[in-house]
Length: 440
Image (cartoon, rainbow, N blue to C red; front, side, top):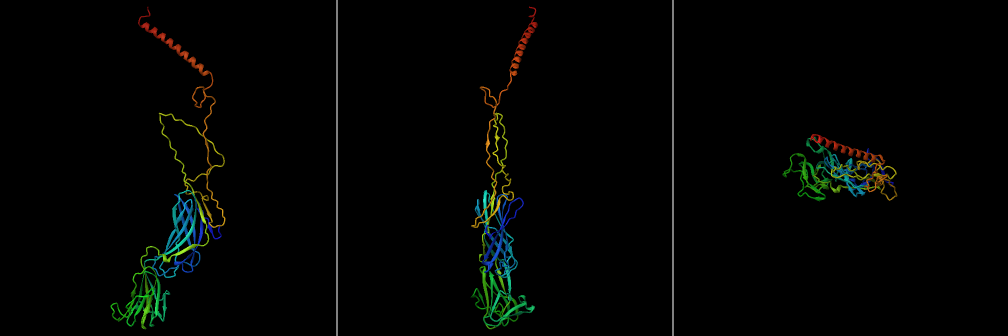
């Protein structure tokens, strides 16, 4: 077998079973630029009724793991889908799938793997099949919801001169802190993945106008004025956690928001609110593709045929016909007694229907033992008799022997004849007596 292949044999009570380990390198999407290595323990099973069930158990091979692409509420899922090639007596594909719910996430958080993937298909055709794992695909499906990104979050980048510090609880700022600048063109930038974003900060007297850029394009005209209320009237006090600007609904994906101080006046950044709407299917832009590292080999299984014993029937006798039978004498062909076929052809005994083989170009030898009964010849033999009467029907039975039987029959017939004559004379004499014929 190939040197890169690792095999684990795991017998199950009443059924043969084997597993192999497939190693993958995943790139792109949630795997990041460096890539992530994972291992899958692939285990196919032949179930009762002709179903082939393939299960994958997954684990990270190194400390590098899949990472969250953004800020998401609790309930996002990591979805994995594998590919299994079936060749031999039955050709096709199975696609084991699985998912794992995730907690609330920020960019770069490690994602938990599903405990396993599974898929099943019918393989009723008898014969030998090979099960070999193929590529693996990883997709991230974000949860619907909103996440607040604080101004001190490392995901927020600042250019220019900014200061940060805590604020009094009475103002009610998000997490009781702010970033502040008085430099013109100072920028606060957040890259996020979602469908909407909002700029959260104070409304307060003395604050200058700011410009908002979305994905590099200026979209606020006129400028946002935190020094005024919603009606354009100058502020007389302070209001915290105000939504100063909110984007339209965007196509789900990566986006960037920038807050630019338009004048050399005071400006604040308190937080950003990132929203993700309802996502039907896991988006493809976060997909990681996992390719096999080396040849993992394949698992070979023998699907037995289904040959149930016929149910005997008793024919109804017809009184008008005389049944005839021809005796048969089976003659064994010699050799060993053929093995007994299990009553359940899809649940064979352990060890006789599974083999692990390598699909590498190196020469390999695979032995799969399949019971095949030798042909049995039955000869029909006619019963032999010692003598057949001349002119008689060839029934297969000999006549009785010995001479005493014929003489006994002749003597018995003579006695009966004499008795009949004597009885007739006595009867005539009696009739004559009654009629007076005796005196004449």
